[in-house]
Figure 1 (cartoon, one colour):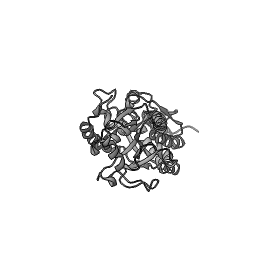
Figure 2 (cartoon, helix red, strand yellow):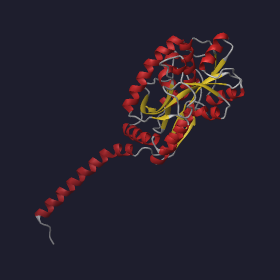
Figure 3 (spheres, one colour):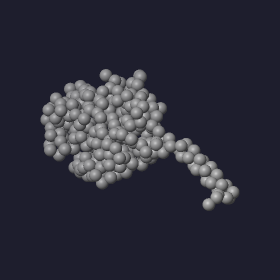
Amino acid sequence: MTPTDEDRRRFLLQTAALGAAGTSLVTALPAFAQTAWPTRNVRLVVPFAPGGSSEIVARATASELSKTLGQAVYVDNKPGGGGNIAMGEVARAEDQHTLILGHIGTLAVNPYIYDKLPYDPNRDFKPITLLAKVPSLYVVHPDVPARNLKEWVALVRKNPGKFSYGSAGNGSAGHLAMEYLKMVADLFILHVPYRGTGPQLTDLLAGRLEAASVGAPAIIQFIKAGKLRCIATGSKERLPQLPDVPTVAEQGFPGFEMTQWYGLCAPSNLAQPAVDKLAVESVKAIHSVSARERLSHDAAEAVGNTPAQFAAFIAQEQQRWKTVVARAKIKPD
């Protein structure tokens, strides 16, 4: 059959339409490729040594993200410098597959205790979500003759400088928590910084340190086993896991509250479609049954919010700790 003029016109119109569609498809390819993120394994950097609350929160999150992102998410501990070394490394990462566990110290405190940082917490990172809040527990070795916070305060005041406490390092949550208590209770206790919660706990359990403030997930097992004595919690209310332990506020310091917090952050160059996807999946991860059960078992609270809400939270915490750092004169050793 010989094609008619109408057939030729229809063919030309279809060809032109296909050409336009092809051009649109090519133009859309970069955006499509970005929404396909991740394309390989994702590294979640924890800026502290293994054994602390940070690793517990990170592993609970990574395990669930591995199920939903289609790629393995693995935890990489990079301790040192109060978290500054890891933060600086991730701030410069360009592989689009490196994330970091943000923390009260690295995001809200370090800018005010260090004269120079290898990163800018507001410029170099994109907040993804606030993952969890962890109540700070104040503990002493069982050999210390103090059964509660009131007795501990009285003991320290009678013996200024005799006792020491450990922390996971300068600017760590444990350092801040104890300095905050020292400030409001007018105490003089020597600070011994370690390279992470794990090494600190080794000496605390052995009795080479008298006291510490540590996030609940890392030490609640030792408290229940009688290897450490919890003299107070930094939470607003008593913890269901430790119903017989009064809060700091209950023991003579009204309004006192001290909780650690951990959030997921990405380098500022991570493509926005990846950020959006990661934000949604991270909230799902931290609120999954397994993650919530793990955190609840260790007295941690799953949060999960939007990037904008997390950014606002960080700003509020920066203002809060700027004041505390100045009053307590916290400086790197």
